[in-house]
Figure (tube, rainbow, N blue to C red):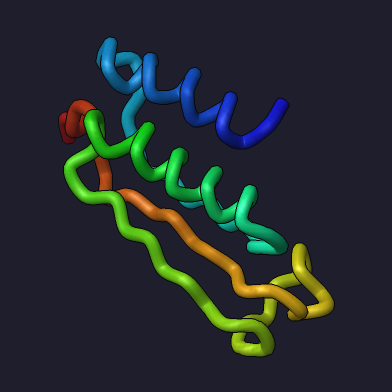
Length: 88
């Protein structure tokens, strides 16, 4: 299952109030198609989450085991907490 499919499914759960938490999504940008998917992912989340941040990290400026070669920029999408606050 692609990350976009997961985010679309998750957005329906957020909308119905059945999910709470935050989301972090990291993608290595190898071509324009991948970049378009990142923008689509951001647009999927924006209607349901108050604050969606998109941050691009240039090649060679990150240390992640998922992307060992550092050849392409990495995009990180993150959200603030959403959903019902847990009672203490």
